[in-house]
Image (cartoon, rainbow, N blue to C red; front, side, top):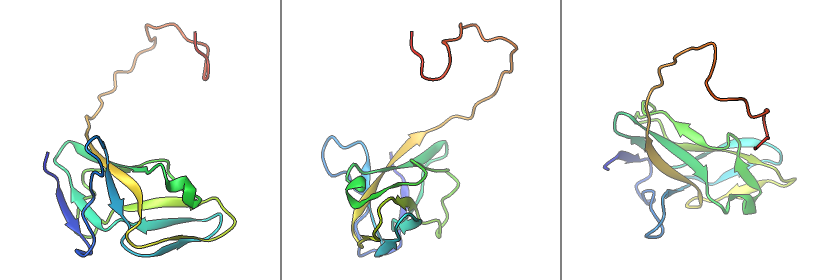
Length: 141
């Protein structure tokens, strides 16, 4: 699949798959960013993208992100297909859960991206669902 992509700073690489079996492409940080203790912040990822119609982009933390004292504040980033203008740079929304400032350097890889197809749902409201209840959240039979 071809996806249109615009780099903000062309001296940094495009997102890339680091191994043959990788399912997500690592994004690089465009500028040094400091996230203060117990605060959130946005980290610019140097690209704006335009996936094909019917596709969206998902940003997920790389497994090494917690080693820095960070996690994604919104768990995953879902980028709608129409967030695709020249100035719509992807950004990671992160939370610093430590008591010290966390410095993210230009060129660091903190998140990865995947592009997925999506479908719009048409709701069909009913008064009864055919399956029996399982007993609530956290139960398994």
